[in-house]
Image (tube, rainbow, N blue to C red; front, side, top):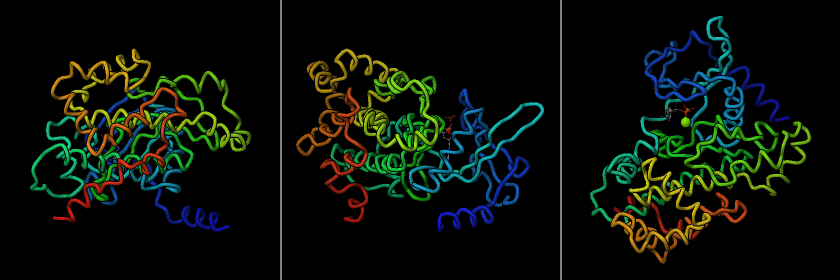
Length: 351
Ligand code: ADP
Ligand code: MG
């Protein structure tokens, strides 16, 4: 009953928007399924550029649905969703328009592209530049803090029954207000509890960050269960297939890229994926093949992960594994001893 009243009250009081309310700004991105702009609301001209607009194709419907669900169930995991609607015009046909709060300028990809990483991320999280000597220990703490924030957001999604399926640095935005990283782009997400978009549209998946089981779900489960059946079955399917571990693999690759600067470019990641496949997705075997002739950069990455008795390396190898069911969950990862040591905020309070 309470839920019903809340939904009713929200329907009356939550503002809705239409095309004419939105003033377009500069283009932020363009994929094959939509275009993203910075924008403002005409009614609030004083706050220029405070929203983001995505004009999406047919997949926009699923993305609106996912964002509405996240808004109610795990709002802090993702960028603040404001509103979504269908916009039909004679010229362009049907488009879905989605609006979010503009969370900030930088994605994790932007930050990782800079030579300053991870210190640029530290400055954003703490809101100040720390006057401390640079070094492995400090870098490890920054990376640990970013990983904790990412896993926290993922745990929220997974506990809600949503698998993102497109976790990558480009889809992780730094929210300037909350000083945390949040997840964006639910265009490829699946909600297993109600069977929405259950069959992965594998052409939507980014091969650079995709786990090796990318096609398994679609071939083993040939048709989307109808909604009531899915609602009854999906907790079982969830246990059986552990679809959330797909995101964990992607998050593990991000962890890897943060630890090894030389693996941050697309080409280097693609080459790493090839090497790992040749090692049957065994990260320990991969390490054995590359470490003897490792560049100083690669050696430094291993050194970072080997800090505190190799606890970082242990976490990484429990995320990047061939078999989904052998990978750690987001909740499990947050409880991993890698996170026992105090992260960035504690460090700043000590000053
Ligand atoms: P696409 O389908 O094009 O990948 P995204 O939802 O990932 O669409 O958005 C594209 C880009 O727009 C992101 O990489 C990010 O730079 C920016 N962006 C998206 N949402 C937000 C937001 N809420 N706040 C700030 N920037 C955003
Ligand atoms: Mg994206």
